[in-house]
Every structure is written in C-alpha cells, then in structure tokens.
Image (cartoon, rainbow, N blue to C red):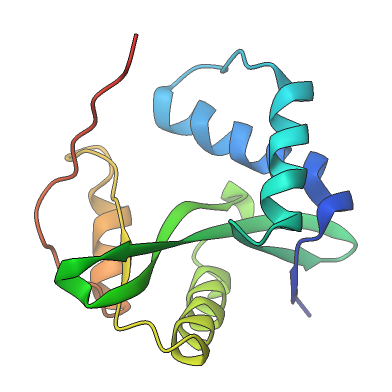
Amino acid sequence: MPRIRYAVRQDAPIVMKLVNKLLAELRGHSVTMDETALIDKTKTFLKNKQVIALLLTTEGSDIGLITISPCKAIRTEGEYGIIQEFYIEPEFRSKGYGKELLEKAYHIARTKKWPRLEVGAPSLPQWERTLKFYEKNGFEQCGPRLKWVNQ
C-alpha cells in the first residue's frame, strides 16, 4: 500500500534524486548538476516551508514526488500554489499513484485556502499523455508558460 508523506530536511537527497530523474526524462539525457549545493538549497526550502514536497513510498522505496511552491499574484487576489515538480517512477505509472499525489496537493490547497493550483506541462506532442492526465484530474489549459534565463 503506498504512503504519502511530507518531505523533511533529511529527505533532501531523496527529493533531489527524484527531481534529477524527472529532469533527465524531460530532457532526454542525464543532467549534470551540483548536487551538494542543490541538496543544501532543498534543505533550506523545506525547513523554511518555501517548498512543500510530498514523497510517495511503496514497498520501502520512494517512487514519487510532487513539489508545490506558494506564490502570490494580484490576478489570484493573493497566494496560490504552483506544482513545480511531479514525478513517478515509470514502472509505477498508470496505477493511480499520480492521482493520489494530486489529491493530497488539492487538500493542501484547500487547507491553505488557495484559490488555485497551477502546473506547467511539458511540450507537446511527446508529452500529450501527461497533458491528458492533468486535464482528466481537473486542470484546464490557461496558456503556455515561457521562461527567460539570466545569463
């Protein structure tokens, strides 16, 4: 039976391992990152509640992760949440675990009285299944998200 729990500072290496797997899958190759620095940042984010991270565990292994960042915007009349990372090990997909993680995220949003949760979906057409998953679970498209990288 899977279990969902809040990640704490000591879970930072687990969080980073799952985030790295997500990034590798999205980019199609391994990602080179300064893991020590990112683990330290993750510990700080978790300690200061700048990021809410939930870990999905089954059979003694951490197989999934969802991270949510609180944000503020005038358009939402205050604070809302953004799902930043969402990953489930491939062999555990399509078993309802993603929906369970989303249900926990919805509970957090309701508890915090956030009017909405947002999530950025990866580019189509390769990730059409991911987009359909979000739509099936109550999300609606509100336009593409773009980024600017400060170099």
